[in-house]
Image (cartoon, rainbow over all chains, first blue to last red):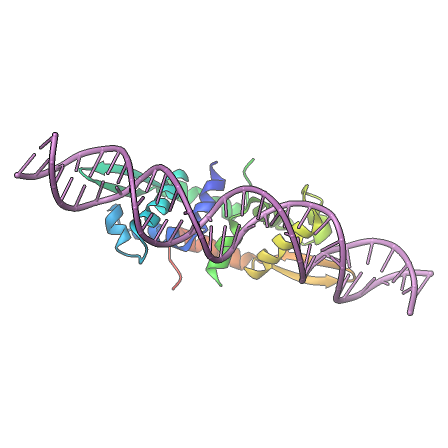
Length: 88
Length: 88
DNA sequence: TTTCTAATTAGTGCTTTCGCTAATTAGAGT
DNA sequence: ACTCTAATTAGCGAAAGCACTAATTAGAAA
């Protein structure tokens, strides 16, 4: 996993937009979903991939799940693109 | 097209390794292929995706095709990751 | 033109991704 | 316990990704 999952996660436009939305601050799943014309379950799967790549962190707040952007992991991916270092 | 193709291209480890190899200078398709345990046709398709994303440029030299890294496009992708700007 | 080498395109099979609807889990409020 | 809302997991079908072998294109050299 690791960097592979990160690039895989970044490969889909919806997931990149989710990250962009989180840049301005943490948001609930529903709040994020309102920015797309996709079903909640579909978005939920996208969230799961971002979480798997550790690009976001989740926190429960009552009945809502709040997603946070994990900036450090994103910046690491960035550094890897810059230097074109490869995993493994 | 555009940024979408770039991130799509970056999503596969083989293609990222190709870019890393090109960092040290232009190389022919065969030269690149020697670094992988994949068939030439398979690699050829990977090259095509990198070309489609404009991450590499190709130049014919006799019977060989020489691939060059297109640094500016790569750095643009990098900038996009940094700022999390989204296309469209 | 024939031949050889370098590389790509065509065609196939398998696996993964992605979207949907339906069903399930989790917490809050009554 | 029941119910409502928020969100995820399960299951399915369509589409795309990836690797292979076989066939094709392009240039160099005889």
